[in-house]
Length: 489
Image 1 (cartoon, one colour):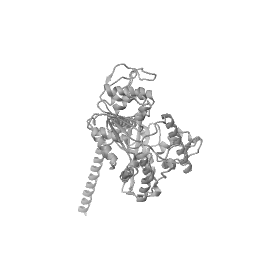
Image 2: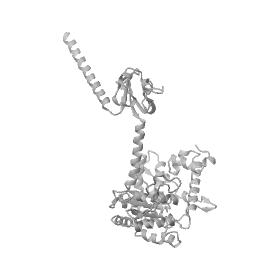
Image 3: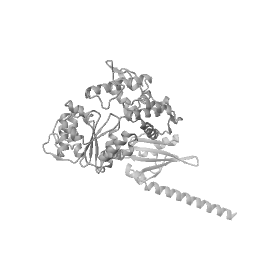
Image 4: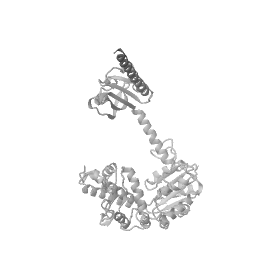
């Protein structure tokens, strides 16, 4: 009998020692982590805090241990520990202020359950100011990386048609030289992809790649962005002045997209960069040497623009050193299956889907269409098709393809079609930039109103119909003041 008692005692001592060892290990782990942690028992009393908690809140063990979980809350708000004890459910991302310094923090709290019994809760506390600093630092790095690195390579350019093979071969040869490149092709054909790929395999690949959309800025702003300005050069200018993008791109590559809309005044300044390898800041007089490889792109016929006096002939020949023509999608339809499968893989990743392919009859619909918006339009159509599919469906069928003719329906301004059913190799150069913007805005406004009507005012459904995010949809509603003419949800 005595031997049995001794055996049970020894067993109890071993189990107790094991529990103590586990607790000591747990406390060591909690104390060594850089995250601020607090633990309370089932009664809501603090049992463990770590040094990181003290550094963050300014409270030490004597202030906290054995005290209610509300002891560290600065504004008398609800204790997340008590909430979790009451609901048995974790909470995430709760903002509150803690400690004598009212430190703003984000709190995550989870229940501690042992053998099915709630034994307490554990909280991980993060400093909001540190999170905001790290977020800003990450955004700063992202902005920097966008300048430093080209995003696409030749492997990202999909196509095995003769026209695309020729274009890629020309681009690869161009990349081996420092010569100026002119990319020509309709909107949506992939000119920017080619610019990225050329830079990526050139000797300048480890230097900056900067993309500038010449049509997105008014002349005065574009000039100051490209060439920089001296302090006080104009109203609102920084007193310290500003470096221009040509200086930022020194030893690297600058991609001038839609160069055909650049004013004659800026064309003269660009010619100086090409001829003299130097720039002069706005408001300045001293030239600054720059070594920049220029890749330009246009969707208009520059030869015709030269004839009409809208583009300098001397600049045209400076840019036209290595011209590369990127064919429109309607001229390389043999690439359609490859493009569609590539886009399906992309949207499978984006939307967490498992779509295996496209049915022949759906592919035939795409092959029969003339694609005025080129690959960019195809991307939109496939994305919308994926959105239209049920989670159980694995193949794109004709019912998933949005009506391909709706882009060219007779929505019109003053009775004239906005988009013609045919598309020339280059945009109509007689349409000036202002008229094109009015046409684009009017078309977009009509499309949004029609989508709202078709969706019975449901913004989410309307956004999906248009293939844009809900955030972009709300922005456009505000931009075109649609709320005044149509009630939406």
